[in-house]
Length: 231
Image (cartoon, rainbow, N blue to C red):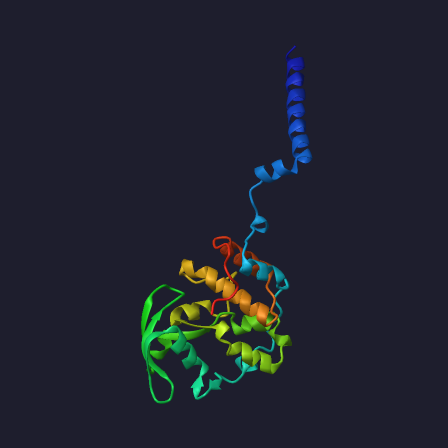
């Protein structure tokens, strides 16, 4: 009798499990509700997300051959002002300039930290505010810039869309990282930061890696409607 009872219990358990499996197989929607969401299921909307979806998805190429000079020898000059000082004049407020078009002082509301930095030109202080290439040049090199002409690479390195005046230490921490390895500590700025990277990559035909695209998407879900460039 005991053996027969155990057999009936085992048969009932198998029947219940089979029923559950059958329900899941016949109802994919239920599977998605039960399964935890994965990164690939995250969906972003808006112009920046649309442009991101248009970027080529590839692996990172070797860094072989990369040198800063591949993007031109330093900053370009325009009407007597070099690119660095043009960006400082754009991004800082209450600036003062000398007769060589150099910004000698001003105030930066730093987008990367959210802090205010009082800038003063000098051997020991100029590096407090640095000009960041939003898409790091070595990252660009590994994601398509090798195929650009020298003139296109120089244009990329001096493009106002690609440049931001930022906190020097944050710029050093970022190094050549992409969105998968570094994002600004100032979280409210991350949407604009990622959107700007997307705009630069679109303009210069650069690609993104899978990890980078996932990181960008995760940022953009918090800001539906984010435009792809901020100038």
